[in-house]
Length: 354
Image (tube, rainbow, N blue to C red):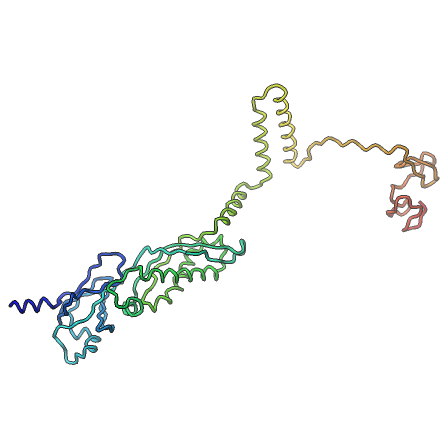
């Protein structure tokens, strides 16, 4: 009886795995030097897959369910072991449980700014970040291409690869879409869908797939954002000329209400009143009253010759005091009106004597 118990202690009759973490992707079942009993119970929970490996070679894959291990439901392992006519003795094989659930809230971001050409800002640099989720779509391919023969693997082992694929695909999506930088926020969903469709074909050979991809934010450089803030402020203010006049009027009102005494207070009030009058005149399109410039005095003793009788008359006179003839404006022909050089005796256009 003791020998029988010892033999049973060296056999495994129940194979199962409970995931106690949120990041384990593959767990190797610990055989602890024991062999698997033919007819043992295999329990594969939802969001799991069990993969049998014989001497380093991939064998059978079991999806969610409860199985009694027999040669009938292990065709590949039966062929590898050369169990042609059935086999009921214990056997050795490595069993890996692959977590096929979605790994949620995985963060991605651009480690370096993405260069792009924008129609409005020219060459700019963009940063982006967001979240994504993924899962193992093909356990067999994942074991062959990624996992290997380790005892356990977590999402940290594939996170870097997925992030780089995402950033590369998103950069291509932004550049090829030619969406203006100011309109990127309105196209986050479209960019996310484009990036996910571009990444999945690259992850498929690894047995992985993206389930969701979210662009949370695409930001411009700080200096560009400051320029945009200034432009927004100008748009909110509207007509800057009217705003400046309003500010000046408010300042003058405060100065006029200031408790000034004596001549200083009178001067401030008079200056404010005059400035306000000039400002309001400009606002209504009327020129402000400006002191008339003193007329330049006529040069004393300047004389010229009458164009009709030849008498000496004062320069600038419109009629001759001797014969009453109307004088032509200085610098123009009296006959044809063409412009001539002052002091010329004949018109170069019509030849009339001046």
